[in-house]
Image (cartoon, rainbow, N blue to C red; front, side):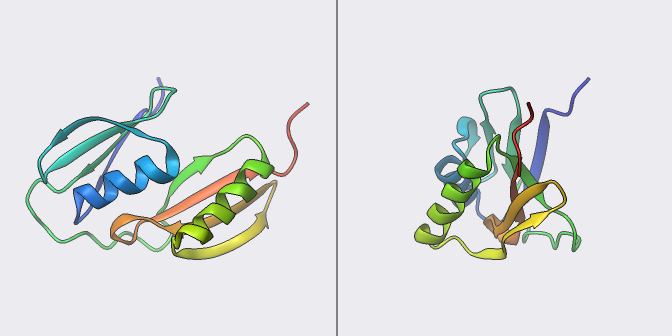
Length: 123
């Protein structure tokens, strides 16, 4: 069994959908007005962004984040540069953390989004 779905509550479904489509290449496979959108990647993960009761976005715990893992640090550096150029708020600058290079940006409704890649590609 693998984890292949996560739903995040956001205050603006359309803004969240646009963010994940534009910056992470997710593809919207279902939407229902201002209540929910499902976005899929190419390997079977489905991210839901929802606000079924028109509630304000929750305050997520301090260390909570959504993560994306890239294969190569060069891809990560290019993405970081693109995010800066696009004006995506960066919460943690590009840096080394353990065996990875990573940064954290601010996603929709203030959700921290970590993007990382291994410093070295496995042999």
